[in-house]
Image (cartoon, rainbow, N blue to C red; front, top):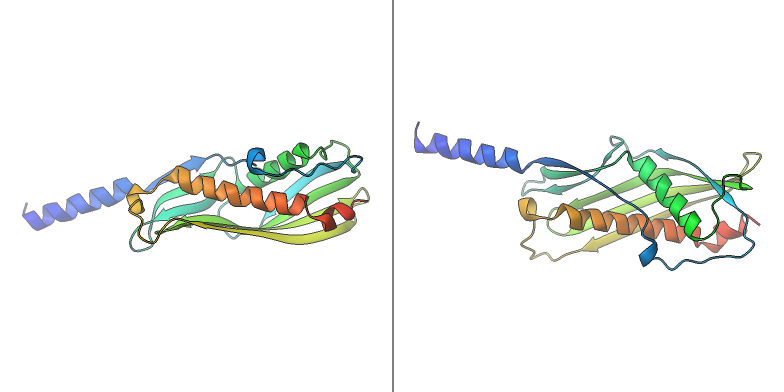
Length: 193
């Protein structure tokens, strides 16, 4: 076997070994949130969150190589819609608004939720939140967004050296920001009075 053939085989093995899928946990971060508790606020149940991202149910991000190829994929456990539903449930609970038999139900549509690192890390969330009364009439609907960007254009921790944990944490930060924006929105709160 000649040297050129060995180099091609070595590079192919190196590239294939660098590709991986990582199942990661995402959650609402109550520590980084400023919780606005309201006394005598109506109780809210949690409804479903429909995933309209056009992606598989678990995929939400990737660390990319020099040609934009995904080297490390990030997938949510068990699914993105379950993770987002759980984050809103935790946000309601932290504010003292969650109940099994509330007067209102909070549900939503996931328009966008992803993260990526080519050189700099970025994460995006766009979630349409709905409030319905007991009769099922929608009393409120609003889309909330969060866009996070961090890192330097001169970073050395990119590609195979990039951290899945750092990108996961940035996605979690964008999710927490959307939950906080929506649950602390005075318009949303007033719709339940």
